[in-house]
Length: 487
Ligand SMILES: [Ca+2]
Image 1: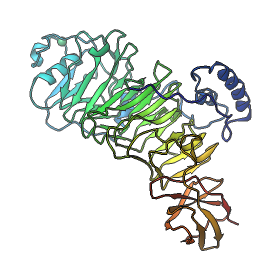
Image 2: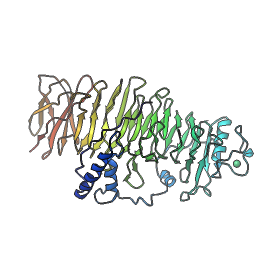
Image 3: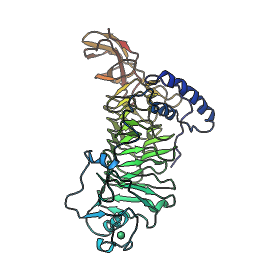
């Protein structure tokens, strides 16, 4: 796996919601960080910004009390998560140890001794036929308790199929010793469900938890280092979501939440999760110095997620096959209420095949660059989104990598009922209203031919600016056009 793309060590001071004093401090710290950025950029400036924002002088989105968020399992119980399959036999975990009485062939709870550990429950599930549901004794795993299970890799974790682990309304905190290595890797397959678990990163090595045609929902996951990822998706139909919260881990560098396995993974879905944003407190925490939400190695769907303070919400490897990567209905740099969180910047891929579809209905706001298109060999269609208040640009093309993209349309006439313009390049025009020169409010779309004016029947909103994009036949979307002020 190639190394993570390092980001250039250049960044301008933030504007917009950041307090003037914060900006001044930011510049000082940023200058210090820049001096350190010789061979690699360790100081992701969004996190400097995050530190300032967290100090409470500027961003008001941090309304929750970070010191006392609701216990995770309790919060998970308030979410609309899938249920374990009805009628599957239940195994009740009654101890926080990782003991394995009965050995690796254990298949009967009667042979597991006085208490049942999670390792024993998983081993039974792995060794006996049919689906299993694993629950947790409230007397040991009360929601407000500090119950954690430390895996040391002895015994190693078994791979299981058709197992449902339900930790809702319990406190089940899974930790890994620094020495457990690959013995703490585990694959959940055959429609397994992981619900309401709190799962730490593993600082000692690989800690991939594979979801093979399985689903994780309502889990709190501490991000793993780049090559691992808190969850690794493989197999057709793997789903991460809804309601997982990926938080920054101990690495503080090259952290990632979800990784797709390019050899085995078909059409996975990452939906309705939170990356770098604690849904319990509505607080943006950010995500490592160089943090990636989803490492994309296959055509897939990423929808309904909140991304806050990541270097890359998506990072692209060389896709294993051609196909669309669909990024829709996500929030980047803002929360679901539209409040600024921490800037992200959605960067198009440096990839080799397939297409990226950004839209519909993403909200991409208050970032540095909203969408930056980085390759002239991988079309990026940006369609039907709300893109606004990004500091540098709403849609831009990385200089030296992708040219400038299609020439934006030109608006030529605006009446109270109609907008007219022209295209230098044929394609689909989208018209927006914005308070600046981006595209906050989608208004209308129409095909456009070179040499023939396009005309859209709309009522332009008074006091705002109109802008337009064009997506050409190859599938690239232009930058926003020059704005037209509506009287
Ligand atoms: Ca036991």
